[in-house]
Each structure stands twice: as C-alpha cells, then as structure tokens.
Amino acid sequence: MNSVISFIIVLGLLIFVHEFGHFLFAKLFGVRVLKFSLGFGPRIFGRTYGDTEYLISALPLGGYVKMTGENREDEVSFVDEPYSFAHKPIWKRFLIVLAGPAFNLLFAVLVFFAIFSIVGLPLPKAGTEIGAVTAHSAAEAAGLRTGDVIVSINGEKTAEWNDVSRLISGSEGKPLTLVVSRDGQELEIVGQPERQDVKNIFGEVVDERFMLGISRSSEVTYEKASLPEAFIAGLNQTWTFIYLTIMGIIKIIQQVVPASELGGPILIAQMAGQQMEAGWINLAYFIGLLSVNLGILNLFPIPILDGGHLVLYGLEAVRRKPLEQNTLEKLQQLGLLLLGSLMIFVFYNDIIRIFSKG
Image (cartoon, rainbow, N blue to C red; front, side, top):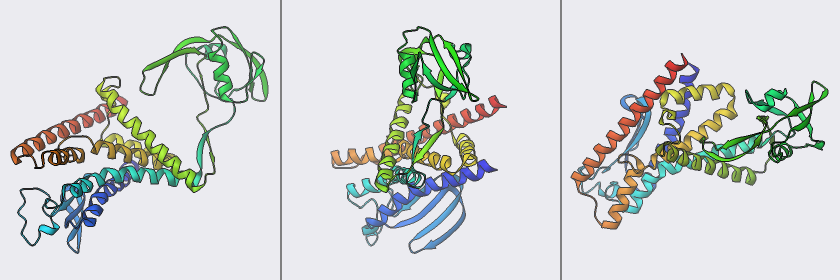
C-alpha cells in the first residue's frame, strides 16, 4: 500500500509539472486549452473552469493537454483561428511543446535547491572509517572490519580518506602495515594490496590500481549553505543527473548496460515506496531524479513524444511547409509501435524482477 500511495504522489506530481508547462505556455501564447488531464482513459473526476475542463482520468501513466486546433486536420472555425494551436507561428508551437520537458528539468532544479537550502550541502563523512569490506578481498583476509578507523599506514598518519587511497594505490603491491582503531583499542594489521580493475558507474573498466578491498563510510554530513550556494548546487545536481541519464541510455544502446536494467511503473512504485520509508530527503532526491528522467526521455526524437514533435517542427521550419498528412500518420503509427513495445518490455522486466526475488 505504501508503494501505491508513493507511486501516485510521485508520478502524479511529475505528470502535473510536465503538463502544466504545456498548459502555461499555451495560455501565454493565446491558445485555447480544452482539457487538462492527469492520466489517460475514462474520466474519474472533472470540473470545468472557463474554457478548460480539468480531469483526473483512470490510467495514471501520463497525462495530456488538449488544445483547440491541436491537430492540423481538426476543423477550426474562422472565429476560433486566433486561439488555434495549428494557426500559431512555428516558434510558438515549438515552445509550447518544449515547455513540458523543460518544466520537468526546472522542477528538478527547484527540488534540489529546496533540499540544499533546508538541510545544507551533503559532504562525505570526514575521517578514515571503513564503510565496507569487500568479500574475499585482501582486506578481509587481513582481518579488517567495517567500522575500523585507519589511524596510519606504514607509519604515515591518515587524517582523511584521500590519504588512505593515496597510500594504498601507491604501494606498488608491497605489504602495508595499518594501525586501526577498533572498540577503543589500536590494532596493527598487515595487508597485501592486489592490482584490480577500476570500474565506472556503468561497470566499464577505466583504470587499474592496487587496492585492499575497502571503501569509505557512505554516511554524509550536511553543511549549511546560502541560498545562492544552494541554487548553484541544485543546478549542478540536475546537470549531473541529466548527464548520467543520457549516458545510461547510450550505454544500453552500446550494450554496456544490459537492457534488463530498464524498469517500468512497477519498479518506480517499489522504489518510491522504499524512498518514502527512508525519509523525505531520499524521496525528494528520487523525485528530482525521476523528473530529470521524464524530461530527457520526452525529448527523444520519437513520433508522439514531445521530442518527435520538435523534430517535425524543425523540418517544417527548414522546408517552410509541414510534412504531408499521410507521412505524419505513418510516423505517429511508428511512434506508437515503438512506445508500446518499450512499455511491454519494461513491464516484462518488472515482472521478471518480482518473480526472481520471490
């Protein structure tokens, strides 16, 4: 139940932000908005204010903003032409479509800005406490444990984790004498570093160096930040997630990351529930990350997605005329096929994960 509630909150919020971007720019450019819906399919609840019917629909996997003259083949009276999407200049149509993904990215910046301005900037825990010992590693063989604090290596004091990394990687594989603090006592432990591959976040080998098989504590402390510092940190965090999202997709295409890692609504619901249980900071981080993902994925040049429409408007600007209706219909059918296939695939991945864990 917690997963269902958190899923509705997270996805509903992000869909609202996305569709509000389209809605706001449509209104800004004088386009009449007929419907603003959270969800697809049958209407559950709705109210009409002015020209717009605001809806909550049965299928919570998206949303839409329906505008007058949204499709070129729609019949629009002469009186309604000033309020028609299709009759607006191409740059206005481009911005209305772009506003949805752009609002998701801007929302991510605001989420991270809010986190950093309230709790401060996250910094790794100072000191040299061991956060994890890799199984079957040189560190485990030597007797190092999680929670040990490394006081010195080969007689050289280690004040920060960078000191530990430098001394181990520069050991050239020679035995190291570590003094560690454990339960109020100092112990002397000898470890033999091993040459190992260094992998990036996508599992690619990027280097090799001598390691014992220990990692620093994952705990963080928060340093109070001014509003400008929090805003810059929010921008940086959003850019980092944009980069990782794009690179993740590239690595899946390159088959570096298995396609089985892709997840759908079930995985999102599970993760949202876990983050909610972990606390509001974790949930807010997850919302920011998911907002970036939604913004980037909607910019993909696939017909029926915002990115596909933007490509078509770009072609229209170059050709000085829109594509033929028959061509547009075929592209939309292709887009539906691609999107439908992707949805089936991620649902399949989600179900396989459930059964494999069971």
